[in-house]
Length: 239
Image 1 (cartoon, rainbow, N blue to C red):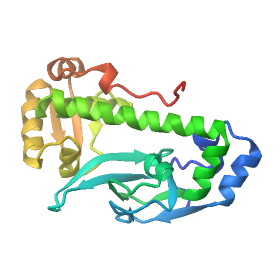
Image 2 (tube, one colour):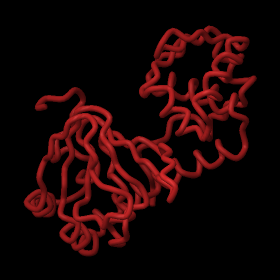
Image 3 (cartoon, rainbow, N blue to C red):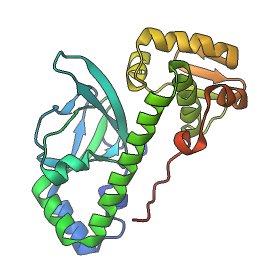
Image 4 (spheres, rainbow, N blue to C red):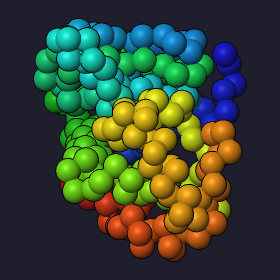
């Protein structure tokens, strides 16, 4: 699993960008690079963190599960994201399970060493606050999407945001199976299919995992696409 596409070297992580060479070396001495296969469970909901995980290549999907066993996809984290740093910093149990949908690599830093470094180094604390801010904003965007839009509007805005992220205004390649995307959008697989069918009147065509977007401006107008809520998020925060 070496040499995954778009892999970030540990030394090049944005988290370490402003750190001194000695602080970076201290953290990496307490870290290991871990390669995992598709389908690997990194941790369970309710586990107490033993490591701060950082995505170097690939991704991790975060799932929430009810007492009755119903499971929903909350979000996917990709390189160079930190995986749920809020739980690591507080030593609180994870509120989600993390599962890997593709061959991936992670940097694992011992949780106690990570907390001690954050306490001791204002520059590292600043970087972690930036990561937390990004994750908080993603959650607010998701809540707005769930509470303010119909199922069809959610699907349309998801497709437009996905095409922007993939830098192709004429199509979106669905990154997961449709059942998982529906779960992330807070709808059933059947509602997702109905929404795609309805959106064919707004200029889309579905071909397997590829959704062709014939008229992006029309789709945006009919689904209420909002560049503030749905547009690409900045990677840098002033905190």
